[in-house]
Structures are given as structure tokens and as C-alpha cells.
Length: 299
Image 1: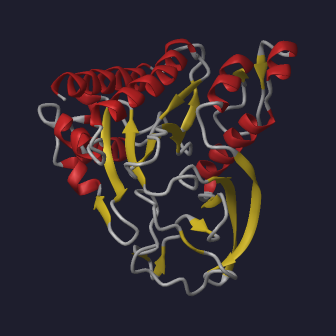
Image 2: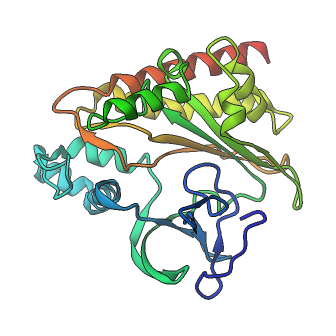
């Protein structure tokens, strides 16, 4: 990771340089740096640290649920699949689990590693950027609220004040990274993302989708890929997501195919929906679709 020492990491592991948001090792709390994503150079995997408490348990349980499912399971168990995770105890529709699996990065396994002087648990996930020569990545935090049902009044107030336009837009830009050359990376962070509201957030999206001269083709691929997520959230009634993101990645190298991909990430605040749709997430997807359509018309 840029300007952060790899001291304290095992073997040849490094901080994942293309991390956009989340816990970052450049941040120090209570005298200790945060633990971010790890990468063994040359591999197609990244290691995401398991968070403490129920947040970490929720995310691990969901990834394990997704990785254990298959179309055969859906045919033989069309009702509910139970998990041991807090907030997911009553299960989820297998149909929803199967469809969601197709929209996330592959979960490989759990792994314990000695980092910064102590053993820590990591989720080993597919690195969705590994097949790109010059990846262009965007993190959008989805939904109209980012606090979950267990949040205290103080937490709700803090989260709401972070980005008031979230309720009207249904998402916010957490930042992007565009590899413009082998040595040069254009970066925008969450502070930049918060500078937009419902009147101009389209400008922020336009900046990210303009890494190639054929911007209209990039936008059309994004719109096409987004359709699967819209269809999923129009029908799924198993989960509600809070503080979860859509990660976009496409090839910024002009001579190569665009190969745009979208995956859902960050599941430490997932709850059962009890037979209801996640309207806040769906609202954000529909608005994002409108913004992309508008950019296509302008290009």
C-alpha cells in the first residue's frame, strides 16, 4: 500500500495497494495501526481481516453460506438455509443465496496469519483486479442509510451527518483508483466523494468512467452489468445490507477489452430481511442506473 511500511507482515505479503476504502494501515488508533487488505504479489487472492465481534462473524458466516451453496442445493432445498451467524439465525432462501453468490468475489477459505505481533484471522478472497493490466476501480457505498437496525441513537446521528445526501441518492462515492500507466495512479478518496450531492454526483461518476477514450462503451457495459444486481434486489427477500458496497473495475488500457465487472463487497452489517426487499439498496441501484443512462446520452 502506498507509503505504508510492510514491516510486521509475514513472508512476502504486502499491503494491498489498490484498497480504496475501509480499514487502512496508515491510520493509527490507540497506538496501533489498522489492519487492511493483504496481498501476496503474483497471486490472484487478497486477504481481508476479520473484524472483531459480531461484525466479523456476520461477514464470515455470509461468505461461508455463499461458498457452500450450489444449483444442486437450490433444487433440493428451495426453502430456508440456516446459519449460526447472529442476525442470520432464521436462514435465507436458497434461491437468493445462489443468485447472490454470482454477484460477489469468490471466497476461498479462512486463514490465520501473524501480523503486527499477533495472530489474526483473514478471509481469503478472489482479487477481482488481478486479471487487469491497468485496473480502474470505484467503490460505491449503497443504500439510503448506512447504520444497521442495532445502531444506537448516537450512531444513527453520526452516520446520518457523515453524508446527508445518501438518503436522496441511495449511494455515495467512497473513492476510486485508476492506473493511468505502470507508474501513475489517479486516486480520489472518500472526502472527494462527499463533496458531491444529488445535484452533481453525476460529475463524479463521469470522472471515473472517463479513463478510456471509448467512454460510452464503458458506460454501456456498466449499465449491462448493473442489470443483474437490479434484478436480484427486485426479487431477493432474504437480506438487508448496511454499509455494503458495489466495487466496479474495468480495464483502463485502451488496447485491451473493457471487461467491466461489478461485485458486492463488505458484509459486516448484513441482517435478515424477514421476507422484505432491501428497498434502500434497490433505490440506490435505480438511481445509479439513471445517472449512467444520462451520461450515455451526453457522451
